[in-house]
Amino acid sequence: MKRPYVLLTSLILILFFIITMNGCMSHMPHGYTKVPEGQKNYVLKGFSLAPPQGEEWYVQMLGESSISFSKKLEQSKNHTYIANIVPFDLPVEIKSKEKFKELVYESLQIQIKESSRFEIIKYEIALDNRFGEYSVRAHDVEKDYQARNMPHGANHLIMDTYSFYIKHPTLNKYFRIAYSERSLPGEISKTIMEDAQRFFDSVQLITKEN
Image (tube, rainbow, N blue to C red; front, side, top):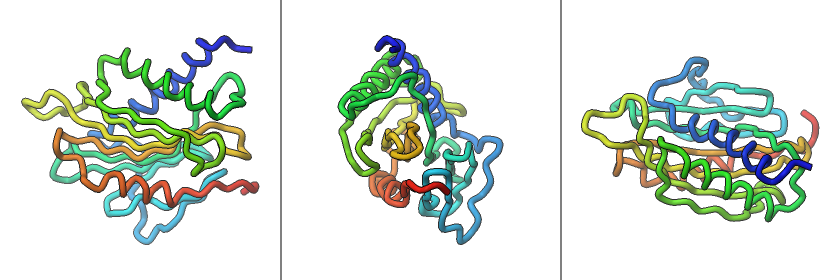
């Protein structure tokens, strides 16, 4: 069996990629296309979901079970949104939901503390069976000191993220489902929690082969 610190390091590297992805949306990345008007549903291997509500969302398929939506406000290229489902691997099987929660918590704490880019302001985590037995709900707020196209005179942007870390019950794989907004301090939408919840509500696990 892998030693605990090897397991923790593996998850840290994976979550660093995911966090950085959420913090690099000051311009529309290559590969995104506009969500077609009237598009109501996307079906992936193991998931079905609706695009986030609102206009000007763009989408990119990242894999058979992975998808990312993005948009930025026209009046501010620094005010961006991202919603996604991204898989991650663990080198050993986790057989306790409490251990899974502990691993996610410790990994994110270590990554944020060691990062020169992000400073954590708020972090909450709890078991939540919305997506099954292995389902961890998280809410974190960070200062992003190295965002692209930082406005003149600004010291940082704020990144507010709601997410779930889950083990899919039939795919036997781990995923992060997230909704994130990044902007200048004081400009985060007052409805971000409700917007994130609507996105999570649209996500359905497909437990039969599709």
